[in-house]
Amino acid sequence: MNSKIRMHRREFLAGSSAAGAVALAAPAVAQEKFPAREVSWIIYQAPGGSIDTTARIIQPYLERAGIKTTLDYVLGAGGRVARTKLWTARPDGYTMMTESAPGGVIDEVIGRAGYKASQFIPIYGWSVISWQLCVKKDSPIRTFKDLVDECKKRRVVIGTIGRGGSSHIQLAALQKELNLPFGMAHFDGSGKAYPAVLGGHIDAAMSGPASGSRMSAQLHFLGVTGERREPALPDVPTLKEQGFNVTPIDQLWYAMATPKVSNDRIQILSAAFEKAFQDNAMQVQMQKAGEAIRLLNRAQIEELVVKQSEAIEKFKDLMT
Image (cartoon, rainbow, N blue to C red; front, side, top):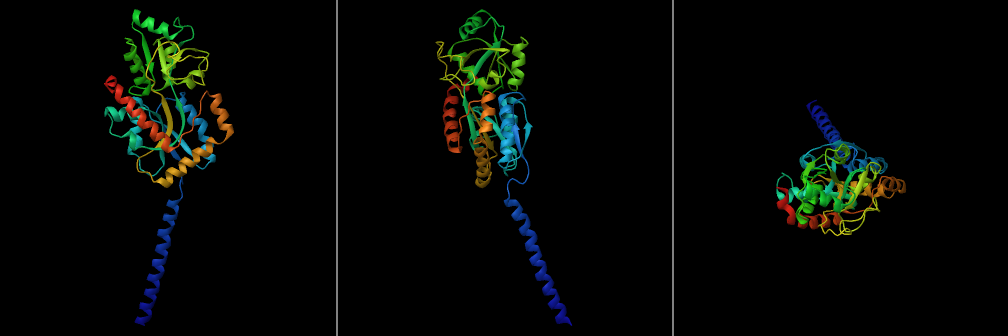
């Protein structure tokens, strides 16, 4: 009797062990599937700007490629609040962010944030663009030279799309290299900067060419800061064409993940972005929105970020 009881107990324990193994295996298999839920996509500028617009264009195509996302607007401090949220997120690949470099690089070089921009993991990039300077359509300021002359007569105020961000340092470089004594006002994205221009609260704003092109009926453009004209504003001359040499601080747009996310999950996210950008319909939407596409893989992004770090070192004293 006892032997039968022991036998049954052994059989029960064996069966329990097998069941336990199956129970343990099931979550393990489930964990291997990524993504099993929506990915939170952090946007650090207000709705209406180019970062928001591009994310909304990409979203449905990314979902067709297997990555469903929800947009999470985290505003403030030129992206530092958003980057801090990404930095402290679980490294599981379920949180990503659109970066507009060199915003994070500026924070790393100056040392005012608790994160390291170089440790965020690039996923995929789609744009390298310069900045445009704009005024309201009926402004008496018609050229960049007009703006320079106006700065010598009175206190001119120019808006950025984020304190401590790349538009801020581009304006600071312009201010220093051309010895222009204008003031600055900082906004959380072009969606807030443009209304300030149109309302006459500031004289001009520096923002992206694509978002500007969507407001071309209301804005007049004085110039772009890069080495060449922007496809979104092909008729707007560069500052260099107009006789003004200013170091360009271009914008690099890409999706990035929390540090320490596993390579296999980064590859899944990267592959989904790559597939999304292969869709001609999305390319057409981007072009209609005034976005100039330049696709970048992880290695290319990392190389450009290093170059930006070197440029920011040159101007870091301007950001204090």
